Length: 343
Image (tube, rainbow, N blue to C red):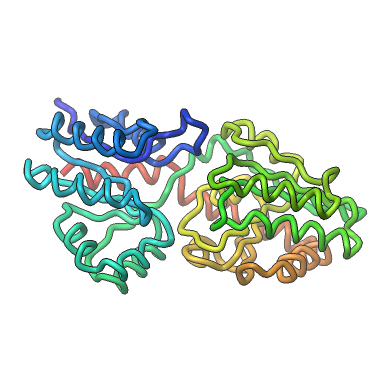
């Protein structure tokens, strides 16, 4: 039986040191069930746009066009490729990303409505984005969550060690919107509150110069012996590295459904995250993780102290987080994609 053919376009830029996006991770998985053409890996934005258009034209007789859709300048790639696909009567499926998309929709409602209303289906990775997009421009949305391979995440019930040893892990690209500086401020306050052995490991590549600023903060605060930076590492490397840490921090100011948080929960981390974007839809506060208001270092320190004072809660959250993560296993998510694209 001939496989259904998909064209999948997005920013395929991991070979330049950036974190792999869905066009790379999901695209590769879909190849097990479909014939998939992916792009673009062109670093120059103009060449990337032209390459995406060329892929649509070259594969215009495909069954579906999948389009990674962001709120940034990349929205032009998505919108223009959709216009092109309509000329060839190629069914397109936008896959929405980023907590800022609802704001983009409110600023350009006509453009966004045109783009979404003519789609075969619109996929959101979270209930949060679905709800917010419905508020912004209306329409119908299908929720298919981001996925993880649960088998790759060895579950370990985390615990708070004696002598106030707090080993904090932060995994994200360095960018202003993810507020890496907050993690440094938290560590400094922990040291000022008697947790003088507390350490922090920050994992991820630089995206906008924030890494340099973060390192300067570490030096200014005299924390060079307590903070490590790994740069970009593979999934296997950071999972192995995570065994030496007991609390996961997510300090972002804007978010949707961060895969790094999903992965941390699968590993059994008690996650302390800012309460922004899709986080309240991702886990239950104080049951599967802990939420605090954004840019509030005192609240994060208070949450850490609470875990130290009530170690039984660390155990409960750790187990509950793993149970929640089971819902995102590829074996379950795969069936949702098959249902959508096999019609």
